[in-house]
Image (cartoon, rainbow, N blue to C red; front, side, top):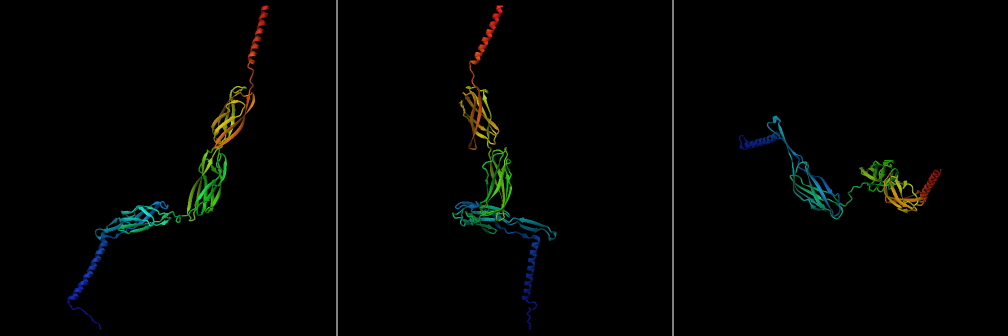
Length: 431
């Protein structure tokens, strides 16, 4: 049996309940209308929350010595974008809207670095200021390393207003090689003659050695002259598939020069390309010096005297011209003669350049008559070494004549002429 309870008609409690329910429905409808009107008339507001990040950091030097100092520079960035607010003015049917974009800044209040084994000397920042969307601010800290090697992680603390705070560890290497990447280290040394004479060739080898801790693979060696005065006639490109730690490889080398190649240092350029164990391709260029040093070649070009005809016992000058037909300068040239004569037997010439000559002058006297052989020794210096050349000079000394012979002949001729003229006059007078 079902019981139904109802208020009598005209009852006051029933009327109050109906009015209360009606009012609630009206309030709900009014609230919904206000919300929809706000969306339609005032637009939608979209904004991203400001976010602080450490975009990059740098430690200089990369590896700190125990007890040494370093600079840690961090860049703190705001990753938030601008807030976009769209407002619709007038009636909804017009479709007119206004878009407004406003920046969302974040305020950095305190930025500190906690050493965690390092000593922070300076760089505690207070009330840094605002950082706009997409902007960054650099902050630098001075730290001192402990006396014990290792990897340390000082922690950066960033406190903000209106945004999220941040803690960021920064690895710092204090004389520890555990994080250092191991790479090959290729070195080039040359085994060729210490110097090359212009116009001659030099044969040798280039030694490629790996002094690193890992292997180098797919090595390409390209050798080319960096100076136009020399050329490489051996193979200029060499491929080496692999070179392990401590291994080396010899590459044949032949250098060609001309007689016009100037003295000095000429360079060979060696370009290396190789792969590391991690697959990274590295490039390296080395300069190999080649010393070009000419060699002087001295010879006697001419021998003259003053006067040209030398008589026994008379003083004269002996001029010996020494020429250099080599490819290098002759320095400190001097000549010494060994002859049975009196006078100056040593002459200093000095420097004789390539394709030039110089005179060695000797002042002599009392040379004996006949064909005289005079030994001559020529000395020169080149690159700190002394070179000696011996030769022989031939001279013809005329014998000295009787000083009364010519006057006697003249006197006899005059007497003869006088006697003849006397007899002719006497014969004429006797007739």
